[in-house]
Length: 260
Image 1 (cartoon, rainbow, N blue to C red):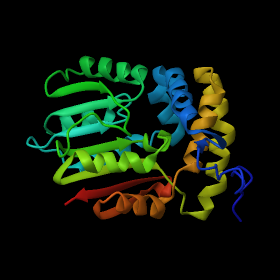
Image 2 (cartoon, one colour):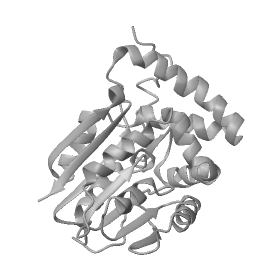
Image 3 (cartoon, helix red, strand yellow):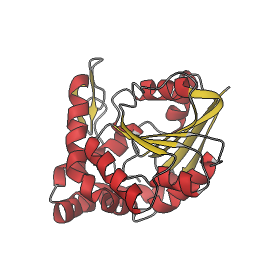
């Protein structure tokens, strides 16, 4: 039997129309972005350590699979949303992809990514921009690939992000999302819950001196749509040939859709 003691109650997890989730809390929609920004301002310097902790290092394998699926080619351009410290952008460029725009709504995160890019010699065919993924400042049909990895769950209006991604894609372009998802192996659930809600916040407190941010990140994963629900959102946004691939028993998943 799965231990559901960490899950929010159905009542508390259903915010009113003018509200949204911030972890297990319901907050007004206009409050979420500043709250999320504060979390990532806090963890920016430890972001890679955070991902290693949250996934036991497996996120690096997931990202390699994700970049391979993106299909880097010299003639294709990439818009990387919520680019964080640059793993997807750098993987794209190393794989032979064309011009890339690395973006994040959080300037602190983008600054870390820019520093990493310079230290790795990624100076050509790469630009940086602070961007809210719900309102992308690009023209319609202007890029070939749009990616977002471990960022969609932190957005207030997830459907708006997917619609914006489709808008800026050229016909034949592809939007791909890598995100923590719904565990599909029953035996993993109690272990994963204990890791997420007991071990991870304690380690966050020890390593980053910030228990609350790590607690939020664990809660945000549980509030994120499951694989089928997110696939339906891709279709609702107008994407075609939507599919997903669960990774590590559903701990994460890659979703993709095409603009035809």
